[in-house]
Image (cartoon, rainbow over all chains, first blue to last red; front, side, top):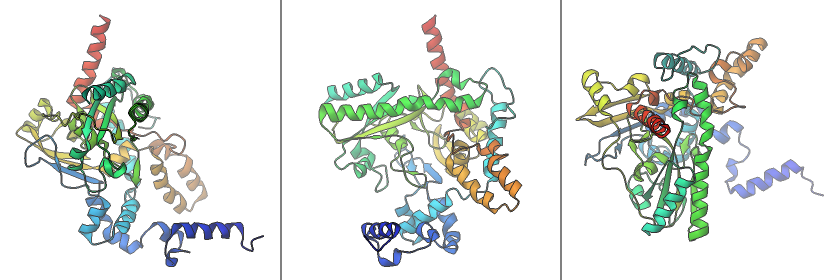
Length: 133
Length: 286
């Protein structure tokens, strides 16, 4: 019988298969998935504005029907622009995508409720006060 | 090859698709960033079969209860099964590797593995519109797309020659007031029209996301740190199960996506499509 616990054995086997360097083992859960908070705060806005979170197209040079992408970059493209590596950019982006004040969700529901009352397509415009938008 | 291409298209239509088109991988590659071409997902991919389904019936668009409309999206299950059926047909009858691509195939965060919008546009199923770059179809308006990436060489349709957006009514509105119905409806949308064509299109996806994905699990996960930070046990409890339901519902159990359709409810192209669909039915009955 192994002297290691079942969990220890699982951890050891998972580390072997991950092929990560030793310094990547035993990290805090935060460090497994996130970047340091100061780094996040420094780059959050830049990454959000360069990522698909903000998309912009303009008329192409040939004036064809396909618009030219001028924003909405991949993590690799953002990394080139801000001088970070791709993995760091991906972590910052994934931390930032939903890092928006809860108020925006409340405003979303109010927007939909009011807009559908102002612009009813259907036969009635009843105000469904107790239902979510 | 033309005969086989037409047979595959007809098969997709018989499976429930409303529109079908073929895009060339070589042409798509010119439009997408490195790593997001169909042949990045399937080595040797030559073609993409893209199909679109109307998201709602005309009646659903006209409902007085918007919740009915959002829940009706479940009918879109048909759309995903078209992709699987087409992929299986190509593999079993022609022997070419194929991958069905359906919405919500996320890479990391909420970035997709591939852009269904680009695939649909390159297959001639519509063009980008002012409203968030959605691909609008002239006949059907808003569509939900799926695709099949395959190593089989098929005859491509290519993109349309003329843009679907802006609608003449929007051009007229822009000339008078420098806005459009979609822009006026939602602040996530912005842009410019020049000489009757889209000049600039801008979209704040994360603002749109809080509206379209209001009940996504991520909304509840966003609430979670606020719940944990609340010190008062009663307030914490009701934050978790109470008033927040009004705004983000109970997504762990429901998870309804696409809960905002306001830009499309006012879009003249989409409204014409709804009306057209309705008239066809009425004429058919008459």
